[in-house]
Image (cartoon, rainbow, N blue to C red; front, side):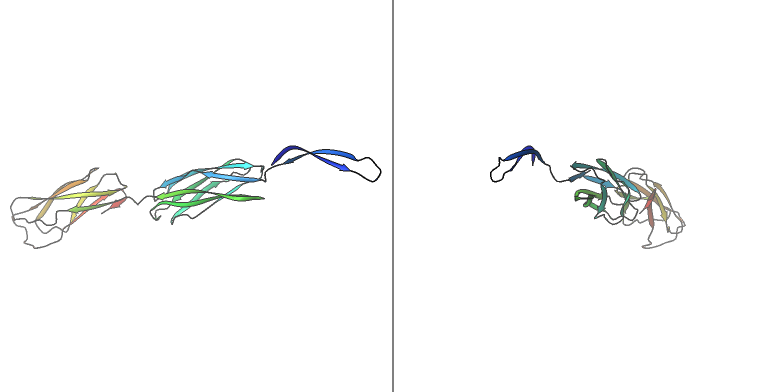
Length: 219
């Protein structure tokens, strides 16, 4: 690359004096672009969106620049984008559907392209968090005597991306068996107290179902 270099041109012929002229030569860099994007996004399934900023650096290029994305995780879409056009920045918005698969740092390629210049890329690492869920574990077996003392089944709650309140419900109780309960709420444990009345039917190995539920989830 040169700037302002003088070039001399000489014309000569037999028996005549040579004549010269000069001009100034400038050699500039070829038109090009470079692109950088926000390095990472983290999305929750079910409509969570996040926008990344894409910055374009130009060299001797004033034309329009457009953006595209490839390598999206399953269930993740581009909810919208703003091309840089003749400006130096644009935006790409990622959205994770409810069915989006959980991934960690999956590379998504953002490509910037313009007429007459080589397309350039930048990588955005996309994480889709696991869907909110809970699981519970309970005391495996309870033995009651009709008209006798109550027994407590302790429950533990394991949470994945869920911090809401959890409540309990009990079903399939034998005749004459009643319950009272302490819900986990925002905590990770609760209990169900079972009592057999004096006239409770005798059963052996009957399965009682305890269900833990929260807003939008159940276990």
